[in-house]
Length: 90
Image (cartoon, rainbow, N blue to C red; front, side, top):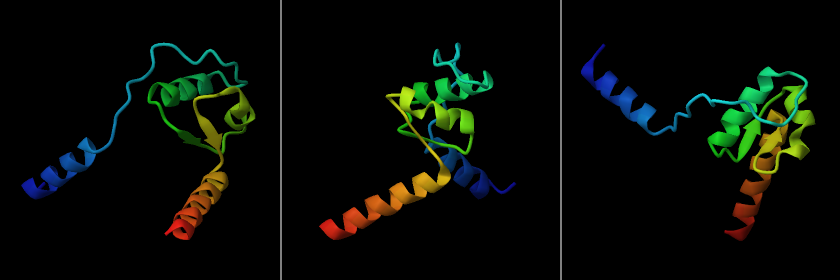
């Protein structure tokens, strides 16, 4: 692999935060126990939004205060709304 490609790739990767796997799952009860780990990862990373089509995670969205859990469509609508507001304020 060319040195320039390696350098570009490393620069790209350094721009993104990598979160360690949590040591314990979330204490919020979810039908799918594996989703407790997903939820703990998002909360530990201090994510603002968790975008998912997973019904089990979407069903507990109101129980999670520090994280907004929404569908891809919901995220798209949120982005469109924020963009529209920004353009109106401009």
